[in-house]
Image 1 (spheres, helix red, strand yellow):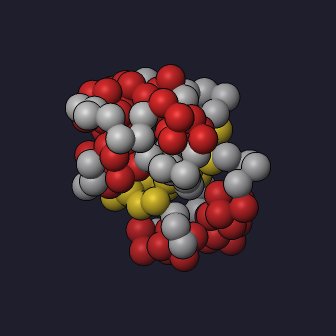
Image 2: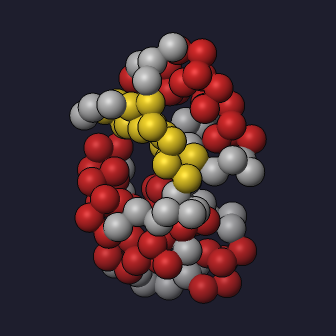
Length: 113
């Protein structure tokens, strides 16, 4: 099953959702700001993406700049920061079985469909 971690207020996320809708494939929408992923779920997503937790952080968000930037943070600290402040999670993330991609640009989603 295809899943998109989606923020309806984000233009890139809406564009990613449109790509999924146009694909004609079934998918699940996860509005991660309303339903925050668990620590285990976020670790699994990071693993599927093949990136470090820091690479999934939206570093231009005010909360990151004010509370975390420039600090010596472990990967666990970064994951906890994203769970406490899901706005920090880069979006959209699309998972298709054992493949995942951050849809920036949204066209990257087509690589895993």
